[in-house]
Every structure is written in structure tokens, then in C-alpha cells.
Picture (cartoon, rainbow, N blue to C red):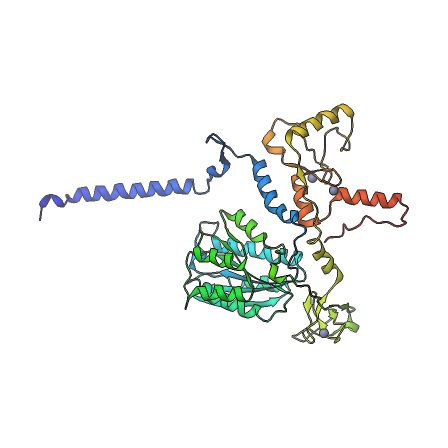
Length: 446
Ligand SMILES: [Zn+2]
Ligand SMILES: [Zn+2]
Ligand SMILES: [Zn+2]
């Protein structure tokens, strides 16, 4: 044994101390820059130079994603959806690359999504399945009540073990098998893991999903996984990989809008629905209500079998009739006739408009001589020096030619589903034509 291979004891201690110091330094450095993601505020221009991010670009990209749906107004959509959401609670969901960890982000986004889903699709049903410890577990049955799903989800949030796509898909397909033929069958998987641990060949699940015309969409939190892209491609779903928390939310929420139907599913069918009567509150309305037969007041009565149900929409637990109220139908209507896509007004034109407005006095504006948003009356021109802060994308409705700011544009297309400019024009027209009691039409969403 060579004596010089072993260093002197005091050198050992020195090395250890130095190493500890280096580790401590590194940790301190990491802590300091932990939350600092300065690179996200930079973008590359056409010459490869780094520039501060033009937030208008970001707004444009988001508009593009959101509005591509309304551009496809003539597409036939699956309005009555049966969606199984599969949540990956494997150990990969405890990783902290999203803050505070993937599980918390997933739970938060999913709760918002469930509410939004029923807001956009009041006639649809949703169920939850979790993947944990290599098995799949049904958390809630396909049903219509958002709060029940959310309560169940909150009680099941701990991560561990592996994810099994095959087990989860088998369970989802099983529960989607019995739904009526007019229903649009979908599976949405929130996938945190990079692998799947299956009892057999996972491709069998792909085949089964395709046979039962179940559309599988996946939102990944880590990186692209081949089996996920196979699943989505074969079944006509969408596959997205989240870059960060906000992107994850965007990807998940994009599934709230009804998806287009496939060619093979384009047979028209009439769906029998019942408009349930509301029961009086108070002692005279007290009865045993719903499947659980709870003694309570209020609720609704099925027009066919006179059974009592707790809430709408649902299917009658006695005769199976779909029970809805007319606002539910009205709220589904806007997917078929969406607000037209607003065109972006170029900055140069906006500048000219500002000039002409200044010259001519008032136009498109209330008081100040600047063009203002028709929705919220905020100013649309960059009067201040701080160009980056105030000025966003400005858009114009192709029908009524009114200008809107970015926020109003999103609000109109995502929530309101009516253009205030067009509604005012049609209301004025009705007034002129002497229609007595002409109300401004459908501003009644929500
Ligand atoms: Zn009934
Ligand atoms: Zn506005
Ligand atoms: Zn309009």
C-alpha cells in the first residue's frame, strides 16, 4: 500500500471543513435565488438579443388560445358530457418544483375547474378517480354536484406510491360504459409522474378507450411521456405539458369548454328532459327528498314520477329522467352561437384614432377625448410615460365596431357571452321599431 495515498489527519479535517463551508455557501445561494425566475421576464428578438418581455405578446398568445374556440362557431360540439377526471396522487405529485408542491397546485386548480366545468356545462356529469400506490380508486361517481366532488377531493389529498394508467383507465372506461349514446365520453388525466406501473399491457387500455369512443386528454406536470401522447392521439384528445403553475391552470381550464364531436358521433338524437317544479319552502314543502331520503324542505319534483330531488340538474333517481331548469339550457346555448372573435387594433391605428379624436372632439368616448373601452370606460391610449404598464392589447368587435380593452375582451368571451356593443345596437333598433317593452336581450348570464 502506498503511504502517500493516505493524507495526513489534519488535512482530512481541513478538507471536511472546507467542504461543509462550500455546501453551506451553495445552500445560501440557492435560498437567495430560489424564487427569482428573472429569465421568465426576458424574450429573444429576431436577432437573438435578450429583451424585456413584451407583455402584449403574452396577452396576444392567451387570446389566441382562448378565442380559437369561438372562431370555430360552426363546429358541432358534445354538449352533454360525461367526464372522468383521473388525478395522479403518486409520489411524483409531492415534488416541489411547482409551489408549494404539485399536489397543492393540482388540488387548487382542480377545484376551480370543477366549478367552472359545471358553470359552462350545466347538463354534464363529472366523476373523480385517483391513482395512488399502483391502484386506482373511485372517489366520486359520475354526478352533477360540484360541491360534493370538491369535498371528497379535499379529504383524499395525500401522495404515495406509483401511478397506474392502465388501472385508472379501466376503472374510468367501466364507469363510462353505461352512459347513454348521446353523451360525450371523456377522460381528463392530471399526470404528475413520468412513468406508469401497470399489471398488464397498457396498450390494451388504449384499445379499449378507442373502442368505447372515450376521448382521453392529459395535462402533464413534469415532461412529455410517450404513452400519454399515444393515448391522446389514438382517442382524439389533447395532451399538454405545463411549464409553470399558471400554464397548468390554463391547460386544465381549456377543457371546460365542450369539445368538438368526432365524425363517427354525428348522429342527431333527441334527449328527453323534464323541467322540474320547485317545491315551496317551509312546513308544507317538507318531505323525504332524494336518493338518501333525507327529511327536508324545498327541493324539486320530477314531472313524470313525482319523486323529489335535492338539486338541479340531475337525473331522477326513480325514473331516470334528466331534470333541468331552463337557465341551464340557456347557459349551454352560447357554445353554439359564440360572440364573434374581436380583431386586434394595431397600435398605429390606435395612435391615429387618438389624434383624430383629439381633433374632432368626442368619438367613442364619454368625456376626455381619448378612445375608451366600451365595456369598462378605461382609457385605451398611452398618455402616460410608462408605456409598458398601462397599455395592453386593444380589440374591436367586427359587428358593432366598438373598442374593448384586453380584460373586457376576456370577460365578454369567457363569462358574459354577449357583446355589450351589439346588444345596445339591437336594443336601440327594437326601440326605434316601436316594439313596446323591448328589453336589452340576453345580458342575463349568471
Ligand atoms: Zn322521475
Ligand atoms: Zn374594458
Ligand atoms: Zn359587438
